[in-house]
Image (tube, rainbow, N blue to C red; front, side, top):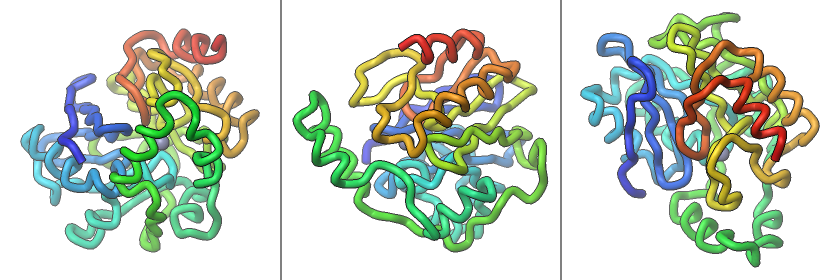
Length: 247
Ligand SMILES: [Zn+2]
């Protein structure tokens, strides 16, 4: 897949935008935390994004995953097998990553909607990126502690179930940034919306919970968000949530 576009959203917080999905790097000295890991086809682009900010893939101390969908875990097994990088998710999402159940849009969900504007080119793009693969992360583990994690960037997991049952956002209190994953996005090939919004309903495991998760995100003291899909958004998080609810 194409090289990612990397920007520094806050001091030591980098958003890498792949073709259709983002991943995030948190830097503390030479140590890094990686949040999400693109499509399988983004593996080279994830490594390149690390080199772009002057780091080395072996300096990633851990990978945190918002949720175990293929577009967010593509490079995870490569990092784990090549560098021994540990991988953490919420308790529930760890089971999803282990392949104990699957939640999310099915191929049929996508096929039924291929007539929609943008759906066919998007489908072809993500298939090239490995969207039909179902990576199993047998080594993935639940967070080792509760509260802020002892990792570069000191991210605090925030339970935001709905898109998947164990979906987790990551709050960075020191810089007032929240990584919202797919609980709140700002752009997607299928929505054509530019600004905070929810993904189309067929992507979400539980639509009511997805909406409730917005209320949790709204309580965070953040002035910007980095979504799983779309550009980073600057502005009070409460207003971003209100904009998403109003659509
Ligand atoms: Zn996604």
